[in-house]
Every structure is written in structure tokens, then in C-alpha cells.
Amino acid sequence: MIPRGGGRALNAYDSYNSMELMICLAARYLEDGATVVVGTGAPCAAAMLAQKLYAPGLVIMFEAGGIGPLLPTMPISVGDSRTFWKGISASSMPEIMELCQRGMVDYTFLGGAQVDMYGNINSTQIGGRQAPPKVRFPGSGGANDLASLCWRTMMIAPQDKRRFVPRLDFMTSPGYLTGPGAREAAGLPPGTGPYKVITQLAVFGFDDATKRMRTENLHPGVSAPEVQDNSGFELLWAPELPVSVPPTGDELAVLRREVDPYRYIIGRN
Amino acid sequence: MPQGELFVPPQPDALRDWFRHKPKHLTRKVTTAREAIGQLVRDGDYLAVGGFGTNRIPTALLHEILRQGRTGLGMSGHTATHDFQIMAAGPCIDRVDVAYVVGLEARGLSPAARRLFEGGLLKVTEWTNAALAWRYRAAAMGVPFLPSRIMFGTDTWEYSAARAIQCPFTGMKLAALPALSPDVALIHVHEADVYGNCRIQGISVSDPDLARASRRVIISAERLVPHDEFRRDPTRTVIPHFCVDAVVEVPYGSYPGNMPYEYFSDEEHLQAWLEAERTPESLRAFLDKYILGVEDFPQYLHLCGGLPRLQKLRRLELMLDTEGRGESTERL
Image 1: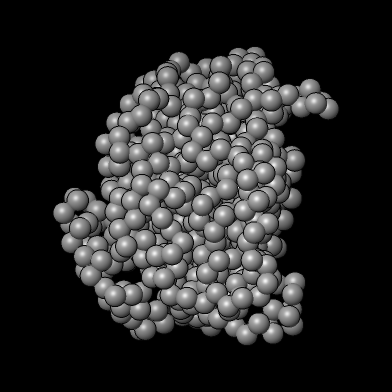
Image 2: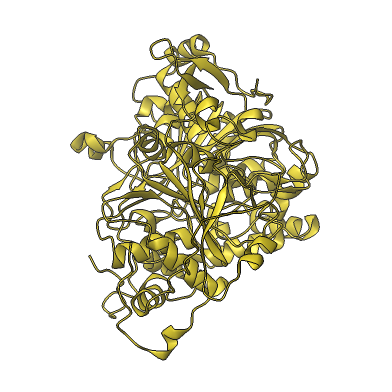
């Protein structure tokens, strides 16, 4: 999607932090009329921004049951009251998961402690697969379900060598597993899988032939070596590497004034 | 084959016998939290909690389990956040089916819950939110498992207790999720009558299935309403009385959790919990003050700021303080 031009030439909008950049870039991938299951934090901010600017018909859903809210503020929990505020439906967790399983959900956003070159994600534990773990995280929650069942999985995540790892300590949620055909062979629904990974440095897609993570856009001022230096695995590169289109004045205005006025998310930069 | 332990194996015929003998007539089930937990929750039971972690949770019932010192409980971690913190504080639990625990979503990770996992003090089987939701559904349907298309290819699968099966119609590979019938379900609802008929407003999460899947069901309700209310509008009954064993009226019973259309979560108190968990000693002092050293839930609410605090959380929930100030963020 081509962003609308930044009509409002306020000085404040000439600069932005990397959280604002990631949210604005993510929002542009959500087209009007699409369905998306989001969690709290940056993904929710991206969906709210998209709903307010580009995609008034975007159907935002939360795994605990909220469908189509007019989000008045940033939810704290994916099951709190805001997730169905003036919504289409206050449903249930099985309702949302069954929507995903029967193919009605286009996008989901996930986070995690580690990601590998195939877009597999760890949100369970550090220090090997066996119990007891060195560090225990929450586990799958709905992440494995969403990564298994939604058509396109996106990630918004800071990137460094601790997070972009050659081998996950624990594979919580499936990306392309071990490469082409692996999802289908394992039993996951065909045609699903990771779509974009948006970090503070670049936007990544996945190479069709190898299903490995591939750099597609560099953010303004970021060099290719810098992106590779912040990854623990070897990245692939698109033939062209256009610079990411920075947030427009419109995007920043709505993000700062309406989506996250208390800077819960964009203040985390 | 997945190597996780199946803490509660499916037993559809045993459950049919159990449910056959559950009383179906309208009998008065109103009791206190102390009595309900005292009579219906035993050491070693497998427990499941309704709501969603910090939303519509039966806090008063969970406090009572902690106060009565139950141990050796199993727990379904179906997005268990503050509810898990309370059970981890005992610790009342020694085994857990994990979909989501330890974290409190955007609020951070629970140090006390981490200590249980990282100290090897819990037996753990990994699942997902959908897996546990459908496991309840299978038990509610009276079948031993439900097929699904999740978890394949991951370590979550490897450390679960699911099984791969082949579909007899399409030949496709499916994940069989074993029916989960907890010994006890604790569910907080908006309204109940004295017989246990229940209404929930907002998202129901998995609670209609959970109430039908569990052997014993304890309901806490924001308020009791006359039975005629249910007769007047039967479409709103989400849990029928014959699933329910005990009904406890607890105003603000989900505090410090969020109760839709009633009150928002108390983020300051939840933060105080997290901070108190930094060491076992500071947690003990916190529990002594707020839970172990009080008689009942109203005393806890009083310690947490009482009616003025709850009034504030009510205004927050209904967004009254921003209404009419031009701060509305709606565009549609």
C-alpha cells in the first residue's frame, strides 16, 4: 500500500523513533476489509492506526473473543473490555480459533524472544528444550495456533544477535519449520506461513525458493552490513533494496494523538 | 510421539456416569467462599479457572484456596496470569498444562511463577490456548478427543500430550486433542440465581465449555438476581444450573482483575503484586497482609482502597472521565 502523503508539515513529524517507524510500516500492510488477530502492544497499535487511516473496514480480533472493536484506548490484556468496546461481537476463544482454523483470518502478528531464519519463534523458554528451563517465558498462549492457522504471520520485533538466532532454544510457534514444503509435510494447512518481519533496521520477507528470511527494505540511514551484523544467521537479500518510506505526518499525528496518546508503546523505544 | 504427561486422561464413560448422578432439579446452592472451597476442592484436585487471566477471574475463590492451604493441585494454564500468580504463591500447585502462564501480558513476568518453573518445582506439559479450549470442548461434547490442525512441527507439539491421527475421510494428518475434564472449575460471572443459572456479559472466553466439561463447578457472581430474571430472558443463560455445584455472591469478585461493564483492572495493585514477588520473603509479607491475614474478600477490598478505589475503577471501565471532554478517539 502506498502511504498517503504527509500534508501536515509540522517540525515534530520530521523525526520519529524506531517504534513509531515499525508501527507505521506494519499498519500499511493491513488492507481494508482484511481480518487480523492481534495481541497487545505494537501489533495492536499498528492495527488501530490502519483502522483509523487506511482500512476503516479492517476487522480487528483478539484471541480471547473480541471482534471488531472501535478501540478507544490501547488494551492492556487481549481479553480486557477494550477488546470488544463498541465491537461487532463479544465472542469466545473457540470462536476466534475456529475462525482461524476454517481460513477466515488473513493476518496475525506475533512476538517472541527468539526467531530463526525460517521465521520459527520461541516464546517458551531459554536454556534448552528440557525442564527445568534457565529462563521461563509464558509459552505459546495463542501464538502457535495463530501461526499454524492464519494465512499470513507478521512479526514486529527488535533485531539483534540474541533475538535473531541460528537455532531456537525451543520452537514454540511454526514458521516455515525446516524449509520449503516442511509446514505441509508436518500437517499444517497449506498456503500459510510467515509473511513479513519488521525490525528497527529493516523489513524482511521470505524467499520463495528457500523459505528463508530475506531483506526487502532498509530503513532510512541503515546499511546492509549493519542489518547482517545484527543477525545471528545469514540473511538473504532481495535484488533491489528500496529504502522504507518513513512515517508520514498523517501517520505520526494519528499514532501520537489518537492511537497511543500516553506513549505506552511508542515511549518504549 | 509427543512426550508430555497427560495429567487428566479422557474418560467419557466415567464422566457420563458422573453427570448422570449430578442433581438436575432446582436446589438452592448459595454458600460462602470458605464453605464452597472447603467442601469442593481437595488436595491433589485438577483445577481450571474461568475468564482470561486478569479479566473476569474468580479472585475471591482463589484467595480462599490459598488461605485454606490446598496443595498438590493440578492446573490448566489457559491464559492463567493473575490467577496463576495466586496459585503459584502457595504454592498450591505441583503440575500444570501450559498454554500461557508466568507472564502478565503487557505487565511483565511473575518472579514467583518463574521460580516454580526454573526451580523444577512443577511438572509441565505444553499446549496452546486453542488446544486447551478445544480440550474443554471435547469433554463438554462427551467425546474423548477433538481433531485439529495446530502445533505440528514444533517443540510445543513435542512436549504436549497430543497424538497425530489420520482423518478417515480425507486422509489428512490431524492433531488429536484429548478431552480435558477438570475436577473443579472456578468461574466468575456477572449474575447468577440461587440455583446456579448464570449470565456473562462480554466475551465468554471458554467458560460455557469449561462449565460443561468439569466434574464440579463453583460459581462466584457479582450479584445474585431473582430466578424469574432467567425465566424472563432465557436467551441470556450461558451456564444452566445443573452444571453448577455452588454459588457464592461476591461483589467486585474479580478485583484486581477487569470485570466487563463493571470495573477495570487495578494496575497499581497488580504492579504491587509483581514487586512483592521479588523475593519469597517479600511475597510472604504481602500475602500475610492482603490474603492470609484477612477474614474474607471484603476485607481485602478494604485494604486495597475500598469503595473509593472501586468507584474509580468503575469510572475507568465505563470511560466516564474522558466523556464529553473532546478526547474521544473514535473516527468511525
